[in-house]
Amino acid sequence: MPEGTDIIDYIKKTPKTELHLHIEGTLEPEHMFELAKRNNISIPYKNIQEVKAAYNFHNLDSFLNIYYEGSKVLINENDFFDLTWAYLLKCKEDNIVHTEIFFDPQVHTDRDISFDVIITGIDRALKKANLEFGLTSKIIMCFLRHLDEESGFKVLDQALKHKDKIFGVGLDSSELGNPPKKFEKLFKKASEEGFITVAHAGEEGPTEYIWDSVNLLKVKRIDHGVQCLKDEKLVEELKKKQIPLTVCPLSNVKLCVFDKLENHNLKKMLNLGLRVMVNSDDPAYFGGYLNKNLIEIQSALDLTIEEVKTLIINSFKSSFLDEAKKNEWITKINK
Image (cartoon, rainbow, N blue to C red; front, side, top):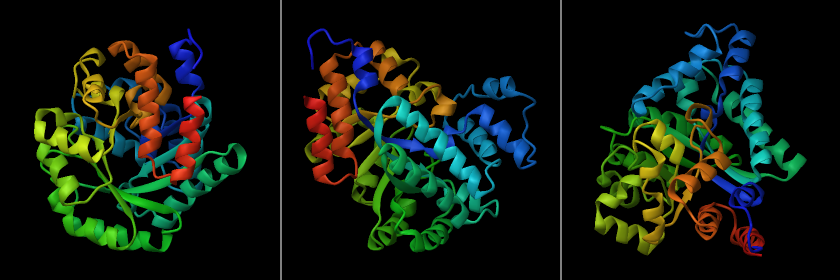
């Protein structure tokens, strides 16, 4: 990169990939009201200011309550298309060239919304983005860990006819009290069906959840994983195997995992040789999309331009793009 490159300019202009993004978490307050009106759905907020005031979370569960409430406005295929398309335009704006998005079907199927409606709306938007501005993508279906494994099996069964659209499965929702081993059989079945596996672990939960996600669920990536530094053996294992950790800085502060960005452990993880990267998680709720996460964590931790570059390259290395495409993007970034 040219000497004297401005770091914020570098972040904005460099091609990026995002690997930890919940599509339901991109529902902006304005869009929530628009869909509530369109679908004649009652929501417990009088105006956008009330919604924003409710975004004052003290832990993961306090956020999830509002997240599930907001998702109730998503009813029709066009709602899922519009939601996804709005995020994809943000990708274009942030120079994200590849995204791997999570969706939570049980949030919707438990409201009697058809699985086909959800996946068709999301997939249609992704195909349009690929045609119009070349964005590539993968869809990862998440199981809600606060529900039982049987519920997960039902939704996995519904996903089987959509293998052409769904690349992998993940595990999200309330972490504490819902260990990975609760879903061992489900993940085994998903793997047998050809789905790549990932899981949220070590956001609020103990390091054992990271170990079990790797050893029992056989995941290819750990989503969050910031608690790993509490266990030296785990750090060595993650480093040796270069298991990716999809870190979400603004989310971690908003949900009180860290009291402020300046105390985030991302730089320490990076310096230890862990394969970490930056993502936005649920940007409508946590105050920023990918570029904002990168810009704010860079400023808070005084990351060098080389460290930012490593984070961006780590993300491409950890994506589910084929090796040739990964190398093509990494070569462009290294120029």
